Image 1 (tube, one colour):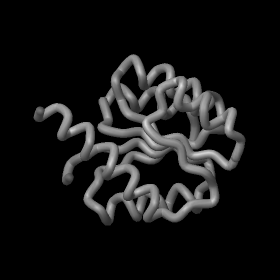
Image 2 (cartoon, helix red, strand yellow):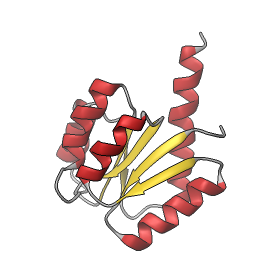
Image 3 (cartoon, one colour):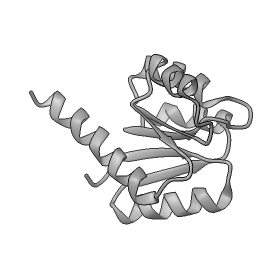
Image 4 (tube, helix red, strand yellow):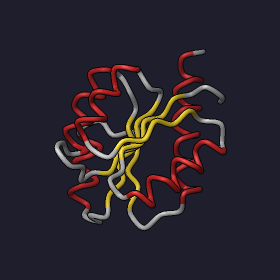
Amino acid sequence: MSNQKIILAEPNELLRKVLTDRLRIEGFEVKSVVNGLELIDDMESQPDLIITEELLPFRSGFEILEIAKQKKIPVIIISDADLESKILEAFRLGASDFIDKPFSPNEVVARSKNILYRLNNSENV
């Protein structure tokens, strides 16, 4: 699992720090950003996974999904919009997973590991 790169896009400073620290403890290399423009710029580094808040400044998480899909980068969307329509839209646009707020940082780690495990094992088949 070491050396797997994650970009975390979260405008809330405390939540961004908690998630970044938790993911790093698990051995991930984490780049954290606060808005959609930074995230788009950092996608050029070809991360293994993107975790993004749905409501980012400058670009929405759904706009990010469109770009990430073209680059074949899996995306976890985090949102406090507990609407079935938002969840279905995220999956329609190619989200690998959707996490409702509030959540446990351990849940984010577990879902990240699960996505990356499935991705790595599907390539080895």
